[in-house]
Image (tube, rainbow, N blue to C red; front, top):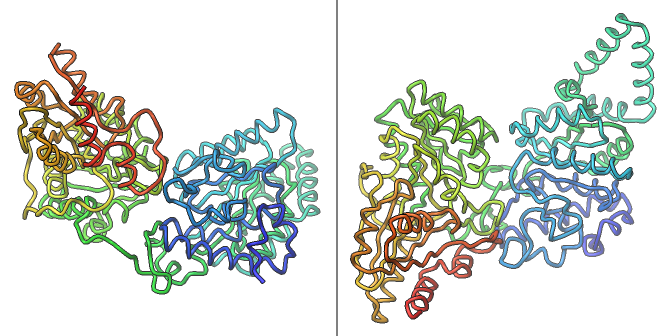
Length: 618
């Protein structure tokens, strides 16, 4: 008999006998694997965290007790145990469940997440709010070891240690180098030290020693340091946390026992658990990087299904970077824990001495690159657009203010699809366009990608290159990267009735729209603008001589984006014009297939055609 179907909420879970919990964990894994194989998703992390999540909901009184996930990519079991079992098959699909915790989706999703290193800060805020209201609930932050490479996590840790509020931080560690500590000795010592009797005895002994002036205080410190010899939590202890672990995070009974012991410990507590990423699914265990975020795949083999053969923008960037770095030994590459996702893994393997992975630390990556540039190197910082938001100050203050030649390669710019609003890179044109000294460009296709990268390195100025996720447009690739003229667009077709000024991945759809309009008797031109900054005002002036009707299209927010730049120029010029701007309005775009979202937002070729026809008749 299956256990999972009987659980509609954590209250049902707490009625399950402990001997049935290992079976439940296996059922959770099977459900996660089967669903992810159809919808894609963050598989490896979710499989590794099954026992942690099950134990937390079993021991704590959720939703009164609050669980905050860091990044949230490990929370699939959490969704299955908190009333979303029937809807779980819709995860990451349009109008279905989000792939991340989301406050409006469930009362059990206490904080919306998608970016790393935020959970401890949010959990601490909840703990202080609880204290101010004199409530007795528990607050637990579940963080991955990767999240602790981000500085924000340490800012929160030191603040939590200072405030001394009751807070449990669970460090989910799936790095293999630490796994040897999960042995008989570690298990026995953790079990011993988490019992209430030992905790009370330790507190009494410490208070007793502190009564004896300097000698007693020194003895207390010595005892604390002696304890830390056996435990790798010295740093957390020094920051004001009581550290326990490591324990086996994939042993449900051990997790429940330890959590029961720690449940009522006062002050900030760090529990270090070790898990196996991809636990229970051999392909994910053997290739954890591949299955961190995976598309549709065959459950039996682990092979991905329906992958396009077209060159992706990421691949075009990676290939061009290798060609350029082969000739120019001053080129260096930096990523924030995303070598495979940004295509820097090939650079890493070929030029390891010039490759730097700084962890989840975008702020440091930017200023580190500024230092490299100041020292004569040519750094490229490869980030997802959504994560570049985290180093805005460094781009302004450390790079552009000093006019340092740092290249930012912003992957996943524009709509990214199933990961949804936490990952859509739809703000970069808007938040970068107003920064002096910065060049801001967007290639129309994978071939133009390689030419823009060479242009960026040769510009000797701060340069942002933004490009979308996924396959390109199947265009023929030139043999070698060439320089483009900075701030200049190109006409693809000139129109007498209307002209579309397109940028980035909307250029090719604009060409299709122009063709469809021609079939309806509308002579529509298209220009590939290439640069949002500096803007090709000469091309815009020429477009006005052809027709006063202009259309802008971009994979970005309309507010402050490329279309806004065109509108500002035309308004300041006091030109006679009519302008239709196509892009993303004043909203956070939900998740769904990219093609569905483009249709919904009026940005696909077909929707462009319809919008332009309606606008023309006004």
